[in-house]
Image (cartoon, rainbow, N blue to C red; front, top):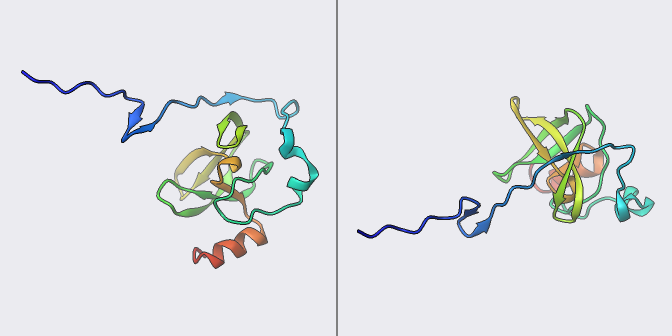
Length: 129
């Protein structure tokens, strides 16, 4: 009898899906590293998908990029947790969106943007608004 070899549950269609555990963070002690520089704080991203550092507050209105390639308006619903992002260690913010969905998203992954006039303009230019 032939049996197929067991697949590693962390591997889905050839993509490594190792867990990225979120950990509690004290924002007063958190170091944004190079992203804390004033030049990053005063800049705007060039594209919607660009990783871009941003510090949110609970209750802030945001735009979140879902896994289905759609952008949804949402709201920051608490304090962030820390984990590895595309750009290194970063903050993941809890977001509620699309009426009943909730997940953590990171601005340094390019999946979370503040609801500001420049971001809205980018959304309009992309045909999303």
